[in-house]
Image 1 (spheres, helix red, strand yellow):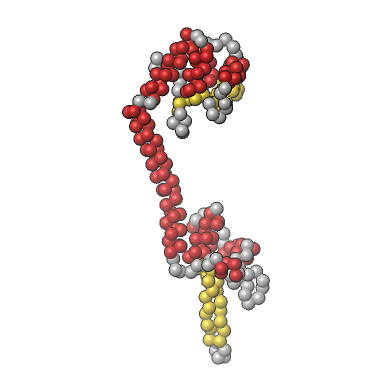
Image 2 (tube, rainbow, N blue to C red; image 1 turned 120 degrees about the vertical axis):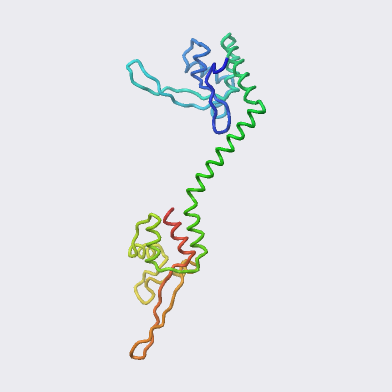
Length: 236
């Protein structure tokens, strides 16, 4: 009775049977669509006992077309087989009971649990490897006490796949409220909003001129927190 009717499993570790394959095995004369509609009148519910799917079939002209099918949980397949009250129905039900018994064998349960755990570990490894460079970079930037110029931030962004030069980055920072856009002595200085977020700091440089006068130059620099913030923002 091995492989009498094909049985598959889903991600929830549930055993599944194709409605059309079961219909064919049972040798039911009624067309599949009408037969299945009659079967669900016994109280089976979509997305609980079965799901609707499509399959490709060859038509008489040699082409392909979609045909409705249903993926049944094993309990539904057993009940439907019993409803038929035929020798084929009895045979199918006995087969499903045999499969279920083997499926619930303690050794099989442990084996499946190990397989599921192995798949999860492998998936986590893949995800961790994909995230590792970004995580390392983010941690390093976040812990950094070194502020950088906006032009240097543009270079960092380019290294991470964001092709934006310094001029375009300045435009973006002004348009999005991070730098002051009003022309004057505070042009391109951080807004109060970005200062409150800790994204920028202002470096002041005292310049002594030859005529004895002193001027102060102000430069906006992106903090470690700001570097992480903007890179994450541009990377989405």
